[in-house]
Amino acid sequence: MGEVIPIFGASVPQDPAAHEVSLSERPRAASLPEPARAVSLPERAERVEGRDDQATGFAPIEDASLRALGRRGMSRRELERLLAGQGYHEFAIADELDRLEGVGLIDDYALAQHLVADLQERKGLAGGAIKAELVKRVVAPGAIAYAMDLLDTADELAMAREIAAKRARQYGALDASTVERRLTAFLLRRGFSSTAVRAAVASVRSA
Image (tube, rainbow, N blue to C red; front, side, top):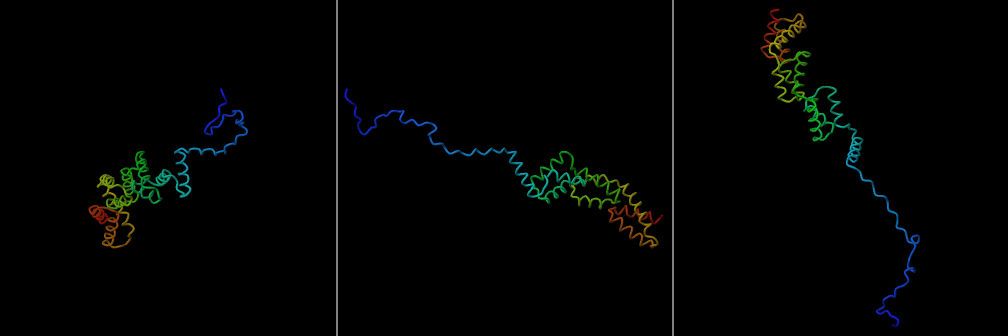
């Protein structure tokens, strides 16, 4: 058979050994930077929380609410206003208030009863004056009504008489009509009912 002549310019196979390039002679690929480590969601939350705390100077809302409650008992609405004034978001505040109610750290009914007893015994207030203080503390209306229903009318009358007797001694040599007028105004400011006031003033007059 004669020599095979390539046609159409096809290349003639060469010795494979002639085209082999050693590994050491091959160009090296440029080294790539290591991929960044994935950051988990908890880590992200910690970083964001830490940044926010440093930027605003706020303690976590739980610490803020517990510090406030450590100073005195507070109604739900009262604490809500305080936390809002410190810049916490309304949704975070609602969650925190629900948590505190769930563990009994805020309870408008218990607070109302405590305030009624304290205002009545320590400050000598009654009826309307006590209710005004509860409203000022933003106690829930239902809790106010419940606590006011617990007031004993007999206790109110006895207290009015006791306060009137002590107060009358401070008026010294004032005439009877002036003493009665001042006693009446004083007892009404304290929240005593008109019935209790009349009875107390009458007891002083007859003493």
